[in-house]
Length: 399
Ligand SMILES: Cc1ncc(COP(=O)(O)O)c(C=O)c1O
Image 1 (tube, rainbow, N blue to C red):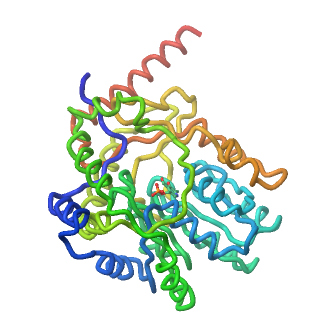
Image 2 (tube, rainbow, N blue to C red):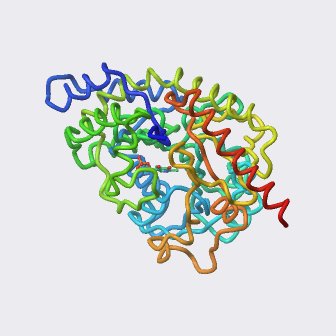
């Protein structure tokens, strides 16, 4: 088949692009204040600091919340960008495990990691599935340390009715191209106390000045066209773009969000609610067709969670169904954090990924839920999963 589905996609309206281009060439007013106001309102935050990426936002949060040379507890399975943030700040790293059935922190492992000593803990919601923030906050409070909520992949998910990104005293967001709500590039640090708001007000003037964002706008416009399933095969076959792969980006000094990105974001934030509702509906559609597929189990949201389904996540107990690039079905991150070469020098002695994280590395795959997912996708997914079943039956019959 020629059609190929992009793994992730964030809607960008013509109006958002026009505003982004206008800001890039200096014809439009600055949108930073308007975007920060929307984020403060949406996340119940006292302030929102707009940055050039989620990684930059996490770097700033680590710098603020940890003493110099301090220790942070990280999930042992997550996006490699959190490694880049640790490298940028020079923090020492401990690891805690995840429960593979839910992708939420394993609280026994969190407790043990914090008892080994940490100055702060980072909790990341993966693929829009809420992590147990209340459980981690309780353990962190016992040790008197702050929780940094990494909602870069929060994607509009909620926990007990509260939006991901509004659950930690400090939270970070990403508005990268694949994050559901995009600015092309960008991130934010959200804070929830007056003291931290004083810090963000100072930090904004210390940030390196933003670029204009012309390149970001051009690539966003190209992505809007080329993400169509009838065209996506073209960019995805250019090896240099490394689409859908885990790529380590060396960190840089955090910058402010570009004018172009803020111009885009002002309008894409308005598309989020509809997009999240659509992703949930398509996730439900896929799940309703998944009853009799052996050895494949959907990741189970924790109690009180309504995922934003940035992607729909499954565990494959025999490890044969981890990817189907034409369907945008991809295996999860191929390494646990202790396997990231860049993190090695920062890992405290003896810190290793636990069994849950290793299981996710070996058995997790995710499928798209974005608005370009259609009937042909559902048919292809069913065929892929069933073909495997037939093969498996064949194997069982032979053995
Ligand atoms: C959990 C997590 N944290 C941080 C980031 C960094 O965001 P950005 O790509 O905007 O730098 C990502 C990006 O994928 C992420 O998944």
